[in-house]
Amino acid sequence: MHVLLTAGPTYEPLDPVRFLGNRSTGKMGYALAEAFAAQGAEVTLVSGPSHLPDPASPRIRTVRVETAAEMFAATAAVADEADVWVFAAAVADYRPAHVAVDKIKKSGETLTLELVKNVDIAATLSQRKRAEQFAVGFALETTNELAHAQDKLRRKNFDLIVLNSLRDAGAGFGHDTNKVTVLDAAGQIVNFELQSKADVARGLVSLILARLAPSS
Ligand code: CTP
Image (cartoon, rainbow, N blue to C red; front, side, top):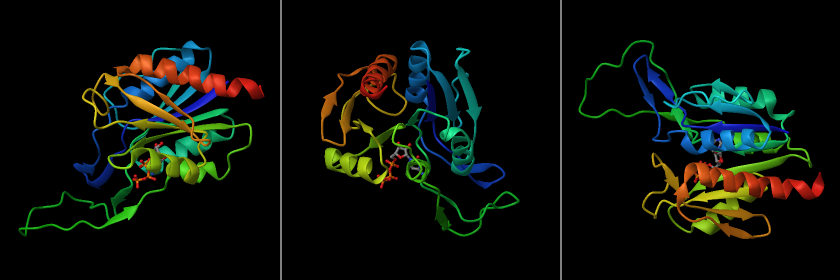
């Protein structure tokens, strides 16, 4: 089995020394890569800038990228041959419309940046998902969590969506622990207790493999 995973943030350059980014560390995505490899899968891990070292498993090929456009190119290149797609990256939705060649010097009291939309990697690839391929997305919501996650699952043609809780202490960006809820298209819900990201990853991988099993 070949698993394609996106992980970490993306950095969108503004000038030679600055970028727009986010606080994703890549921990959840890297833990998923390790958990899939431990189950015997071949993993392509497309990672945005993360301080984590490349996973040591020989089953994991790590491809380092910086921007959403680079992440899309690396992901699209292997999507057709992967059986499972997991979109764990926190992709920047927008990037600066212009990347300055030289460092932007400070001048006025305010500075307005023009941003343009980035490619939605999951939504774009979902348009060419074959029936036997399995896609898993992540959602981070602050209001109407279940309804937003369900809507995202439909829009992006996911088979499962993992909802990250921001309300719970110890869950989400930067933490070693996470608390997630998993939904499918039928509205079936699995709640994971707050636990280490490695344990959440192992639980998610068994859930995904169990969903794949009936058709294989
Ligand atoms: N995603 C992606 N490419 C993007 C944005 C998001 O592949 N440019 C993926 C994420 O990896 C995640 C899922 O889509 O699996 C949900 O991302 P999110 O940004 O929460 O969804 P959006 O559709 O951008 O919705 P929102 O309006 O909440 O930002």
